Amino acid sequence: RDDGFFYNRYLPESKSDGTETEANRNQKLFYHKMGTSQQDDILVWECPEDPELMASGEVTDDDRYLLLFSRQGCRQERLVW
Image (tube, rainbow, N blue to C red; front, top):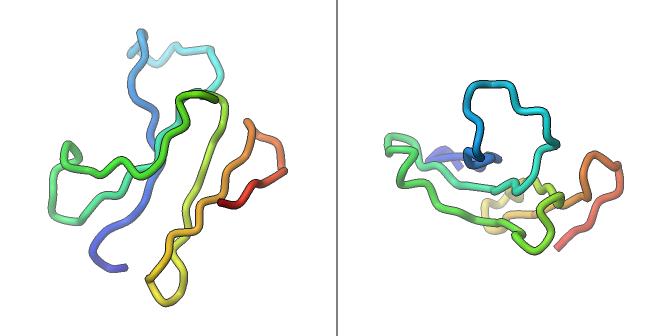
């Protein structure tokens, strides 16, 4: 658990000047190992067939499993895989 962390990232689309007005789409979940470059991060989850699906991950207390919680946009409903 102390080796790294999971985080969400949106890869750059066409605009990069901070003026984007579209909804967050195509979220990706990555794992970053401390002391390494972000270029080496591991893509853990994405759902290209549903670009509005968002996810977060939580590691179990025994560090054996990653629980993935997904939701459609900002709704409070959750799907567990």
